[in-house]
Image 1 (cartoon, helix red, strand yellow):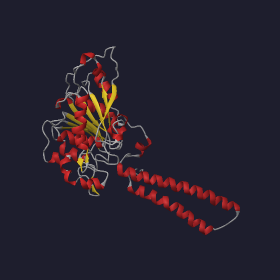
Image 2: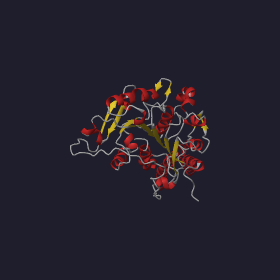
Image 3: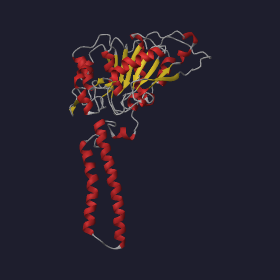
Image 4: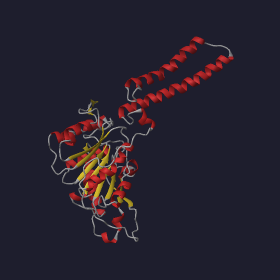
Length: 380
């Protein structure tokens, strides 16, 4: 039976070997001492081989440790890219079919494939201030000059800028296909970053001087609604995200149920998990108010909330160890499994459960189209 890639014993053995190999060689050299010229050549070659092997073992050990902590790869086959049977990516969650707008694309349309535009928002560092906005081709039809379109506010992973969001998780291609096949209404996508300050993981909440939540709710949304023809009412606003952005979407959609109509999360978690212990310490007073799990446990979720979670039981960084997350360094760990356990019986929440693979965008990307289609039944 092959040793698991997540085995702590394997990680420890490789790291020990990385230091033991050069130590043994050094002892051997001390014992053998000097010798003929060919022995000196062999010792030189041996030294080179030992250094290469030791460095390779050290790098492998560091990779195994990081992978065990973050769960990027959950098996050797996953790491080596071995093909697995294709899992179904459609009909995984009930979707009520609704009538959508059929707006044909005319030959005079200047942007038949849609257009990426954007705005620079105040209140964020330069690399995170740019907020790209994708406008569907129907936005440019003369017959729709007075139409306000539904809008999806999409939040990327913690290291994603708005400009990187659609590279990390492709939304535009599945959106275009769904609109073309009349499964959703033409809608606008606003791409938000996973953080707004360089080096500060603020988790879309207001913590200390970092007003991430206020930036989204009081700066981005009003600016978008004043510059583009998108709906200003709850029925037109949707929210979604990947990883950290998935948590942000879950928190904001359940916290501001009068603002957002529905939302989805890909590989998210359900309470803030700050990278910096210092920020976590500053956030202790607001942790409970921003825990979706606690909100569900206390039944403080409005009946109008509609939220879809795509969760992976093999994703240690999102699902966690199961029904109860681990507490480490004063912070509660990933809690997707716990959230599924406490929320699966509530009508406000729907789930797509997958298995295999780790916390990587390629694992979740096939489920983007189904998530968007699920929002379509609520007006997207």
